Length: 188
Figure 1 (spheres, rainbow, N blue to C red):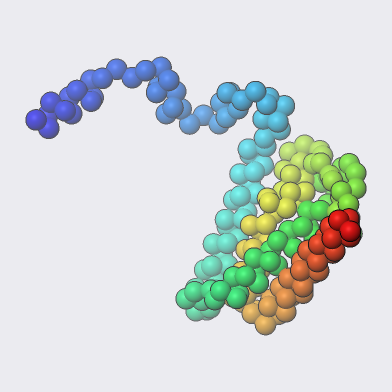
Figure 2 (spheres, rainbow, N blue to C red; figure 1 turned 30 degrees about the horizontal axis):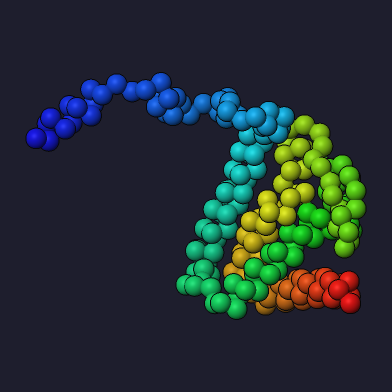
């Protein structure tokens, strides 16, 4: 019985659609999208380079932490909450803050003010310059890098990291209170 099931499965012809599903060609990445301009800007080689740098950095830092027996067995809930809020604020400061635009300027073009001390920018240039522009102008994109830096900071320098994360969490709390105040003022 097993033999007949196997032969039926193997001898079954594959549809043209199923034959294309096994194609791992990078060149066909955007073949089905209607957003050709957006897809044309996908910098896969540059993203791969940045991802490789990120993964290599994480591997080296993890190796160092393991060798020094510094990796925590688990994170406490308060540390996770502190790191989460600090990551949120740090990623907004890096990607959107008006004052830190000097750090992003080589990689982005200013578009307009986004209010509340933030700016809207778009990546510029070609190749890795544009890839970095995509990374550092997007708070969602840069957040894993921020979380990783804060996480390893907690491993290698916990007192300093908690202090700095506390400052970032305080600023994030202040930002939300400012927005709540403005919303309440508009309703009144």
